Image 1: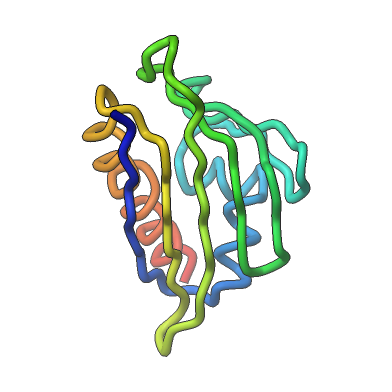
Image 2: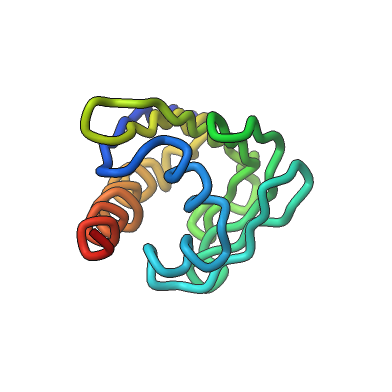
Length: 132
């Protein structure tokens, strides 16, 4: 049975910058350490981590929201695609990203849940702290 992941990450940058970084080919790649295909428009293709995850951008609201159709190489072949919603919010010390990742197959739920901190939140925070 598919499950939903709900997480939030506070990062030391304003939400507008976090939104732009996620949708920037150069900055997304710099913060994850892997090439990425992404663009800030509905219909754009998404590929990351050497093809381990892929999908497309379903919708964007400038500086506020990214909605993606999302799939992992670890999803069972017959699993439906998942839907990822990232919303970007101001905080006193920077910004917060709230994540809802729906329809994640049970077989990859732990990997995807842990992967957000391991491959995004922690490297992103480190990248921002290095950049000053």
